[in-house]
Length: 139
Image (tube, rainbow, N blue to C red; front, top):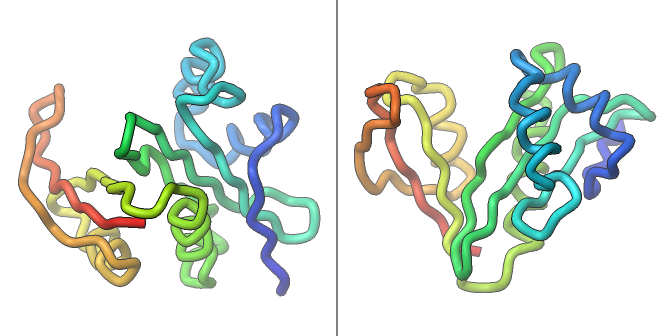
């Protein structure tokens, strides 16, 4: 199975929105110009022509946040998430800190990000009062 990871194009929006549990997130991003602007980068993972996962990084000066990483459930544990994270690191300027926020009780995601090189830094609360862990790594 050949997996291709590449920068998303505007026409990939439909494939990306099919992956999200709530496509309304993408509508906000498109409305604010994130998909094609310089504040955010989207990468898609394809098998043949089908989009099976995507990642979004938001850029803030010399830092970036891995804001979204989704892989279709039928494609979990096949290295697609890892390839998407590696692509995010590859496009950042050396020394850029990449952060990710994960729900504190999402052990699977925490282990995944630690395997990808992230380290737990602190516990924070989001605007809904949910406990999150913030993890950092460097490009």
